[in-house]
Length: 219
Image (tube, rainbow, N blue to C red):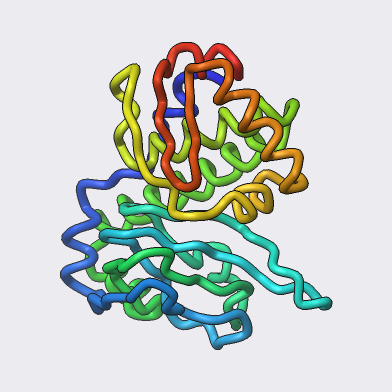
């Protein structure tokens, strides 16, 4: 995986102005839903702090995890063309988000065309990155997919500039396996092997990157 993919995170100098102009600031406690699958679509969301997980339920009630989102990222972009939300968005920790009414955003875009261009670029950029990241963690062997996901996650948190660092994962191993589309036991075996190799150690939700360069070499 090229270094550019790891460091390619969403950012926009215009996000604060858009958020302060047409958004509603809300706080979600851990376990709270921003919106539910089937709700009438009305708004997109921007995470200011914390972390949210998006997931849907299939016909059998099985949870299908779509993604984990961090500060600076948009939620519900894939629902814009639909009349309802296609998934749930739940806070994995206490989080602050901006709720932006999409109709107000369209009106704002007509009044502030320059701002609209930058907002459009930020939204398009995230959609492109989500596709790229999804393809990255869906290809290769189990170890490669895990290493890719770890590096993408740490890059979203903005803590991947050092060769050694640590951070807390907001989701458990079962959820990680769901995201990476592998069986939990396969994930456990691969994590044990990675821990034994010594350049990364994952224990419960604690992720300690001991040698980022070595982690990159496994991708």
